[in-house]
Length: 241
Image 1 (cartoon, rainbow, N blue to C red):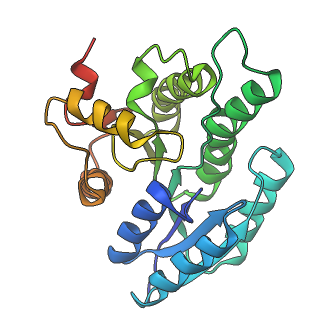
Image 2 (cartoon, rainbow, N blue to C red):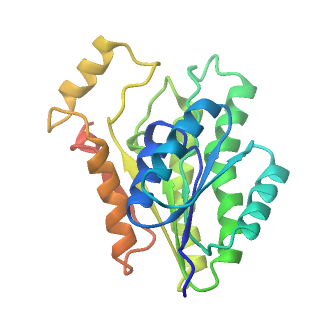
């Protein structure tokens, strides 16, 4: 009997990471749920996954530490389910214009948002010898000049470039793509007035639903002839100047 495939999702305790991990569980994948600081939310999400009758494993890991990335994949090796999907969803979004952003905030964003996906992909491809899929979670901000979030925007632009490089390097065994959401879940960084203003600018005049973001993942799971692409799910936001 073939073992159930394993999906590893980073930053899976809440927000978009949770959306992706639940979609994978509904599609029959065993789950390795990574989290860093959101322990209570991670256990809540794991409980929801268990209700879907799929195996779930948890790992608290600091992905900005390369040694801990290696330890995360040591755990993968101890799980009997073969790794088939990696979703690099963990990210931070420091606020600070280019005049004031600290070196620490710059490094944290680049280390988590860009270097960690690279290191995780390096580790994952070694274990996906019979095929697999890596998805990097980008942002429409990768193509924008968001002066309030310089390190975040740069890291996501780099992630989309990295997606293409890895797709070419890992083919034909492993496919690598990116999903770039627009407005989906309001964060604590955005006031209600600002959120409503941003939604009003979107051509479709509403934020995406969690199901609409998950459907992009499901498309990439099913269509095995897509690699090196970034799929924008943004209601037309990327069309704006």
